[in-house]
Image (cartoon, rainbow, N blue to C red):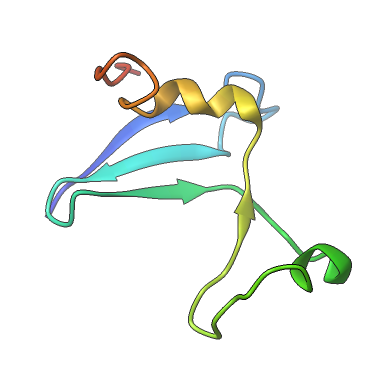
Length: 75
């Protein structure tokens, strides 16, 4: 298994988050973002106990190959 970093938020103050990764073993994405702790927002989700929700800015969509004409962005 190898995780491939596809991109970090270019406006992140410390360059650490949010980040989008691709897992070539599972063919899934991993998203590092801000924890959603707002109870009102969480209450609107049907969230199983083994899952969590993170938030990323819209500008991060550019790092998903499906949004970027099938290409990843090299970082």
